[in-house]
Image (cartoon, rainbow, N blue to C red; front, side, top):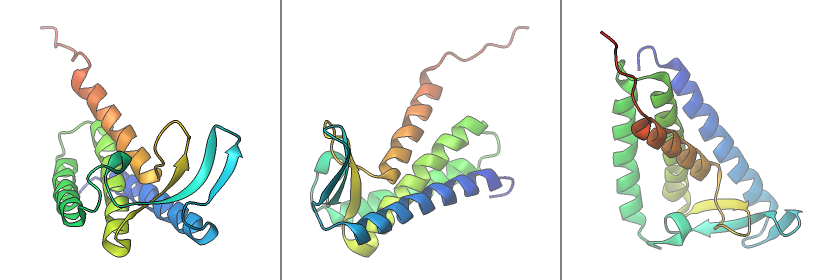
Length: 151
């Protein structure tokens, strides 16, 4: 990706943080074990998610791997476009890092490691957070009013 070092760094850092936190939680907790950090509000809870968000489409391994690979390829090609704004490529970089993080889990473990537990929301991970933040930025870019050139 010529001229896209910033995006590569973003993807690498988010992916590394995602995989490191999953590794640390997996080595520190037993499955379903929970450590409260803010009583009644936030815990670290080890969960193996074999589905998508909220556990939907459980045990659809091949489907998730195929969709993830297609998504990664499409985002990679979109980031390569030199005409895209920095915020647009930043949002895509977050989504790409998250997709890769969860794809790595699925391919090597057969499930996604989740551990961030806010008790009012399903347990998730850093990759899920990156995908969500990237998607929100992308949605904002798509719906915000565009400036018109005054002639």
